[in-house]
Image 1 (cartoon, one colour):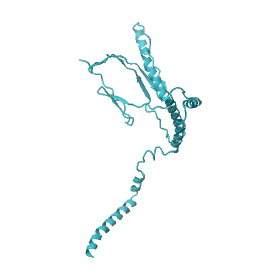
Image 2: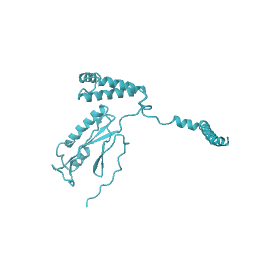
Image 3: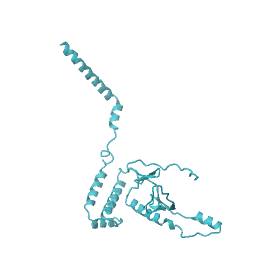
Image 4: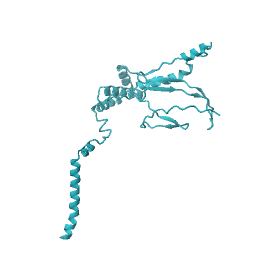
Length: 234
């Protein structure tokens, strides 16, 4: 009997301690709040709104369309009818997603545009047929245009300052104005077209110590580094 009592006592202690912990936890309001405020998974949080079910239904209907039906639907919605079947399908899906999110509280006023402006640059530099590892490229042209992601237009660019300087020196402009911007303007048109189709332009590659590195889409958006004074050549 004594051995049974001795063995049963620790069990009673543990049960009492567990009951005390439960009472303390139940009596503590912050414990309940912490349990309720646990972060939910994307399936239970971001995508629980009924609007995403409507988007999924619309996507299923679009997937069943052939190319002629996709072009007809794009024409009906006054969208661009150019492109292969996969491009038309993505264009329609992006359109329906934007429309449904605009009418739903799931949007919360957030915009899918990550940047206010996008700078489009077309580098042209010297090169050889087989460049050695230590080959120094010399930049020939550095044309650049600016896209306003809110208006989806190229920001106007003039050379009034250059013209004024030439006039003050009694000189005339030599060559065709903006000739070096032709390629960058066409690249900018492609970027605007992609934005109109709902594409999210994110950073996918960066330069680190002169070497290109890929950037995951899930990586946070980083601001541009502070400008530095150019180093002098010896």
